[in-house]
Length: 248
Image (cartoon, rainbow, N blue to C red; front, side, top):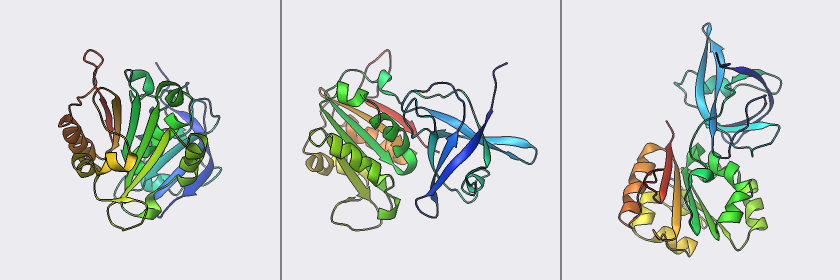
């Protein structure tokens, strides 16, 4: 019978806001592909309660990093957000998920479109060499409620410094006005052309592949907006231009 959990040890907890956190964990799990997820778990009332979380760190990194939001009424995330360096946490040893570049068919431009903690798998992907080997342009889109929730800005800036002509980062905010972020929802900005204008790049079914990760409403509405441009969901037997993963 396959081993369900291995014990990990917290190396660091990063508090981005009062509800957004990252945990860096040392744990011996099977090799993973950038974009995959695994479960974290804690013993609660005599049994291990686990939930899936995307891996932010790059494949081969000895420390696993997870980015998550605290759900006050949730059974697990409030407890995870209270962990500190040295504490134990259970980690499922076998990563899963198909939001990986190995599943993406050939394209010229790659769009990584996320809301909230859905940026996690894309951060892992951007730490690898594959995007820069396969695509001429990579656009990272991240939507949050407030500027404080646009986490990992330093890591994103490092990507921009390394690939200034090929990488574009576009933040969205729904509850604040700034001079650098687009206002509103991603699907509407796809529909009205604001996203492409900001990127200075067209979303084209012949050239583009779009990976979506985040809340189900964004994924569904963005898929509809992209379908109006001629893009369709990607399936192994029917290659398309949209890959997706929904959170919660």
